[in-house]
Length: 117
Image (cartoon, rainbow, N blue to C red; front, side, top):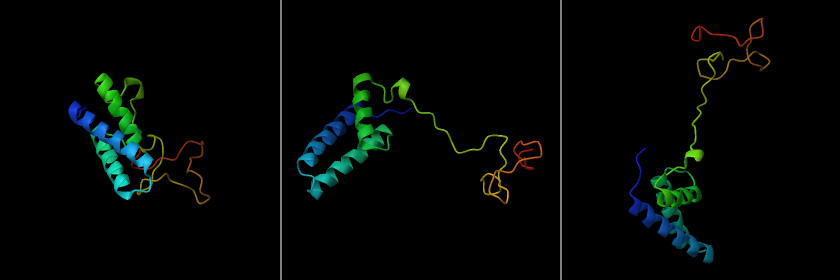
């Protein structure tokens, strides 16, 4: 995994924390809020997170340990792919009967299509 420069992470974490304090002190100030959100977004991009709070946590962990993600927190990305035995239509959704339940064979197992045979 490509990791960001420590100096950039430290710089943006410091900016994020400073804008966070200002935003908490003046939540109605749109300029402060905009700068806080922009800095949070940049930190998200640097750390590969979707949430600024998680990005700040990841940045602190990265600066402390040198690892962007702690080993016990590594995510496994599970796609929405069907199990090999699941029948799919051309659009990729599971095949259904007229009643809306999943299509099954006489033995009760999921029905197979030509593409899954």
